Structures are given as structure tokens and as C-alpha cells.
Image (spheres, rainbow, N blue to C red):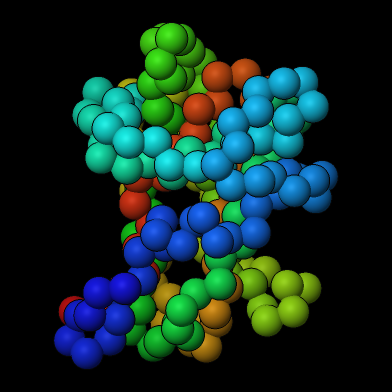
Length: 182
């Protein structure tokens, strides 16, 4: 966390190794384990110096690839190091990365990227955004969300929904930050 005028900025990507990862079928996804077999629940880890669909290389990407067969999602539940405050906002940038060895596959990517705030018991969630991205458009998406209405929340969920197929859904989050608006 970095401080901005006395209030700590939260880089959510730094928290990813300690997040609770699972598939849409509640099958645990182990952080950092690359398993692409037909029974793999998905992959969550970091990629470094990764080319994204817009052609730019990003120093660190949170890779969140859903299960490798069928209709599925991958979900990461993050415990925030501090509660959401009245002037906080979430900035999230995301899209598809260019997978090594299959350089054109990302153009077939088609998925929904979503973020939620969860209540303390994980029984309720408020959707902050859900945005469809297609790799063929060669554009990363950025969402900026005012969190003032969610003061006190301490859990964030990131989710990628592959839709009908996870083929080529090389989903990556390049930035997820919570900070006070100035």
C-alpha cells in the first residue's frame, strides 16, 4: 500500500497470491499452478513483461484464465488491508494478453470482466461493473468506479466469465487500484 494524502492506496494486484481463487463451480484454483489439462479449474498467477492485445508490453499482469473446457468462470476473493472510505475509487484495467506460442489466439478471446464488493460473510455482493471484452478489438478496457456508497467494505471480488467457451480467453488484469480521489 502507498499513501496518498494520509490515506493508503491499495494495489489489489499485490494481494493476488493471498486471494481465495476458485472456479465458477467452487473448485479451488491454486495460485501459481499452471495446469491446462481438461480437468484444470483455471489459472491465476502473474505474468511479467507480457504483450497485451493492444500491442503494449506490461511489466506485470494478473493472469486469470478460466477452466480450459466448457462454460466457466474464475473468481478471486480479496481481503482488503483497510476498509473502503468515503472518497475512494476503484480503477481497473483489463483485457487479453498475447499467449506465447499462440500469438493470434487472443483475437478470439471473448469474456466478461467483473468486479464486486462483498459483505463480511460473503453472502451478498454488489456488482461494481461487468464489461465484455473481445480480443479482436485490440483494446484494453479501463473502468473507474466511485466507491463512496460502499464505505466500510473490506472484500473485493474479481471475476472473468468465459461465456460459452474459454478457448483463447487469455484474460489479464493490468491494474486494479483503490485510492482516494483527489
